[in-house]
Length: 171
Length: 224
Image 1: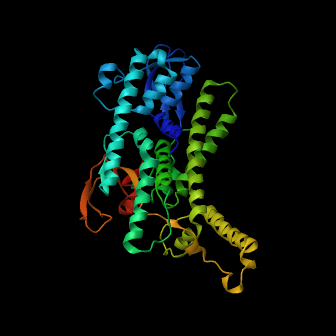
Image 2: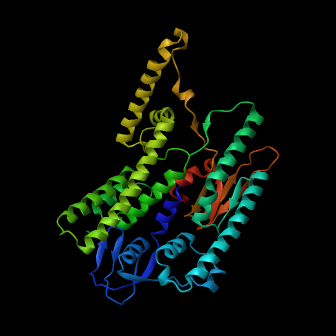
């Protein structure tokens, strides 16, 4: 999956904004939004929040977990964090510190993930539980891991049966 | 604009759910689920034309309403953004199905031919027409560029054997929506034992598609 598609999915999450305009309730296909009143916080999907922010029509309230102390403890949405840091960093207190921290956490987690992927292939495992992986982490390792597994599988099944049916390896 | 889809809901309820009426929001969710499943499953999944048609209906309806709104209206621009997002998912979904049809066409057609009475069909009528045409065109092409110059005994090619099958042994990532017990995990080599795992709701797993393909069709797990 394209990383932009992971971002696309992250844009579905909701975030609180403080608008500086007023607008009646709006009935979208995906649900109702609003009403919008200047200064009153309201929940909207991230795609709308970012659009309004870019047009300087609102201030985004960073999610509670987006604080230096909390990021170290709990799992968080990488996609959303990246989006907010890129497009609304002026609304996030200590944005630079958070950016560095998030990058560090990401590097550590991806390094661990590579190790686990390596042992998964080495041990010829057939099942793994990965509750703590975020979509962006899965997507980072997906092509590499799945292609390797398919490749190993093909080599082994050739060895075992001496024949292989033509099967397509990628999806 | 946001009334429940009473006419569409009854179409969509045959996919195992008891819901008689689906709200537009639930409909969009169904489309997104179908999109991700199709994107990540190695084989072509059953068509969800009922969802596609309802979404199309919603979009046309909304677009017709927007025609009547003045330019520059703040609400209209938000509606347009939402429509664009839904259209993106819809076309990405349909495109990934077409790609699979092109890649596996002899097998897709074969599966469709051997389908029993009353079984849901793999392809929508339009996709079926596309697959047949693609099949015919490929045959004509192969004949024109190569086969007719071959010795007579080598002039036929069996596409069913020539075109690779989808690899159901591929691994997939999935999230569990309805808990499952005792899912058999088969090892690849003979010196390992097979074992069972329980899939708890909300948990995520990496395993072979073959093991869980019925659960994808029934909606008990979501590919991610």
